[in-house]
Image 1: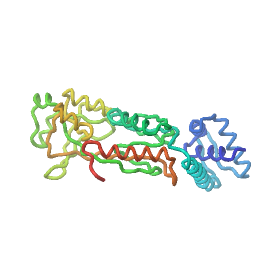
Image 2: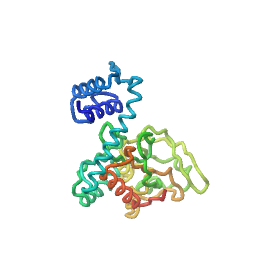
Image 3: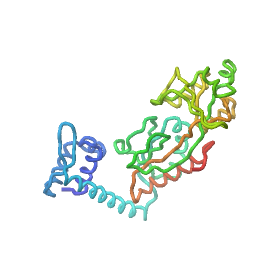
Image 4: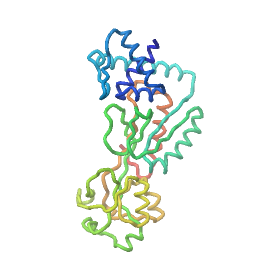
Length: 300
């Protein structure tokens, strides 16, 4: 029995919740995972997993063994990574997930620069506004803008930006420019369709203001939302990094410039390991440095 492969099959099966998920993550077949698990249980003389039509569950022995097996695999991976780093430059495949708008506007160019700096690294940039499960999709680093942070991953703060209320000059010429927050109630407010309730929260000289704004148009793409504002469809809150250039070019105009929305906060997510592979560490440091240079970035 290949003990390392069997331990890896066991840990992946537990953490991904199925033999098929472990097979995808390890690049093998479900029958192969099943054989490895059976061999591991025979060698230990205990049953580790219960298999049923509804999925997998750990036995008491499996519960105790899982954490030890996971640490053993991490220690082995750390030892191999440390040995390789003594003689090698950063190399290997990296998979990075990020939101579409930031990816298209900035990350794509940054990653081309990153590959020039590190010629032995391969990179998959996966752009999706939904949060992709890093384990299921074999993601090394995830760039997250807002939302709940998974408790089992390291979440490194990587920047924060004000959200600015903006509209196109054509829209404001046709509908009038609001001079105070209450006047927003007669305007078309566009929002990101992510399950958020109607309403708008602003922070201004008079403190926090909550306005019961409803939105006739909601879209689950930050790129499409900004394009809708540029086309004159209404007002929208946008992060400063997304609109700084458009404001300079006067293609957009700030509305109620003394007011801002809730900050947009970025985190870099990656696995909690004592020794990250060198390629992951250099990517995290590279991204943190570039994000800090985006327009309107505020210190943490």
